[in-house]
Image 1 (cartoon, each protein chain N blue to C red):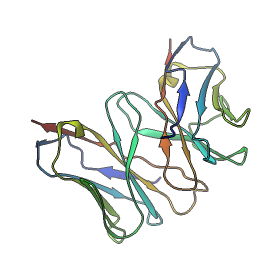
Image 2 (image 1 turned 90 degrees about the horizontal axis):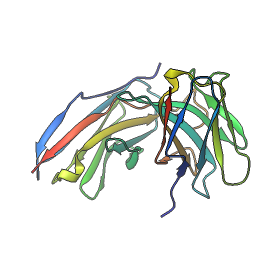
Image 3 (image 1 turned 45 degrees about the vertical axis):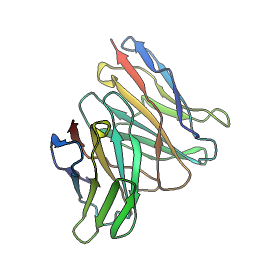
Image 4 (image 1 turned 180 degrees about the horizontal axis):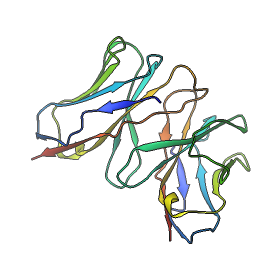
Length: 114
Length: 112
């Protein structure tokens, strides 16, 4: 069973702060990693993908990947109230899965207060 | 910007009835998926579909479930005889390759 663990939250930060979301995964063969944002009652929305070790920045979002530690994180800079949502980590297994089965973590609920 | 669409947004059915959930994936995508999310729980994979056949299915996807791509645009999930525990949000997703998956808005299925 491929496991994905995320910091349980809820995480509460003031507007303008940096929110840090963490994820560890069990499948060493995972090569691709995705962060989704899910507002309450809505579907997951892809916000970041990362494939190589290191950092990837996109606007206020930075994803960090360390395959040796089986760890991926998402930093949100200058957090806004509109960032309040549940953030889902989803590695894509590298072996034993033919086409694209994503394993989701339980998610970290983020609240940004004004 | 192209997006995945799903119909209906909400379906209420009685236990034992058949339901068909419909999805229109993004037009140039080749890989299609169904996921579900029971209220308060994780998003769970059901099935993936490529080249007109199932490529992988989870343990949830038993004989009561089937998928079909009846034409060049639609992708459907059929539940033959619904149970109370099938009540969930069902999400369709598509991807161009074995990578980024884009989700539709979901169908909320309520089985009474």
